[in-house]
Amino acid sequence: MNKKIKKYTEANRKAWNEAMPKHRDVMTEKWDKLYSDPNFIFQKDEEFENLNKIGIKGKRIAHLSCNNGLELMSLKRLGAKKCVGFDISDEAISDAKLRAEKFQIDCQFVQTDVLEIDEKYYGKFDMVYITVGALIWIPDLNLYFEKASKLLVNGGILFIYEHHPFASIFPFEDDKDPLKAENSYFTDEIYIGNEGIDYYGNTTYESASAYEFSYTISKLLNILIRNGFCLTLFNEYDKDIALSFARLEKADIKLPLSYILIARKK
Image (cartoon, one colour):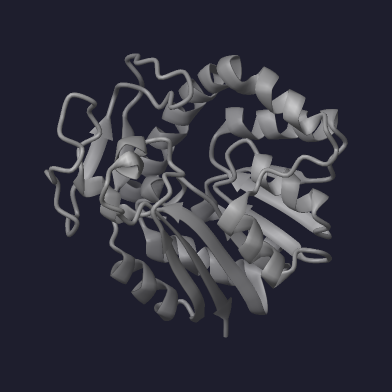
């Protein structure tokens, strides 16, 4: 990996290590209460429906950018054979390991830059799973999906449930018109933030620099094609799954705020 990309990923690791304790303060009691119920499953609605159609039972699943592992632990409860989560944040992986141990959910969590996942994991998985809030933190999506492809067996499945990049053309600030576009969809601009990533407690603080990267759906699809994936499903939804676009979801006009993409490795 070149030094420029490493600069971004290491900066984001520091920013997430600062944010995770704040998330823990607000959410630990809630998540522990939910996972104390052995029947609790994190996935809902469209995501749950599409995962059921694929079939989770018996599959070996790699969750890239897994954060604190909540989704992956639910996939294990749904019958997955092997579950391994990878995330760059030391604090996120620590939370995931503690909760999995506490509720005796057999998942493995690995602290690593996803772009540097060890070769020992190559060809070991039936599914690569990516969920909301992962892709905007990645400085090189081609390397990311090259890694995803290497993790999968031939015929393996890529499942993405993400917020839609189109929504980012609208302002985040509450004092602005939510439907007045002010950003370009077609941009290579890198957003640098120092106000923290506490989307649960909504606190602001002087944080380490966090770098966010833009992409379009067409860019994503072309990257998947280049890395040997064949698209089998692409659905768009007007549901805010990012905790950032609630005003757009409530607006009279329905906008693409999230999507599910399923592809198969050739």
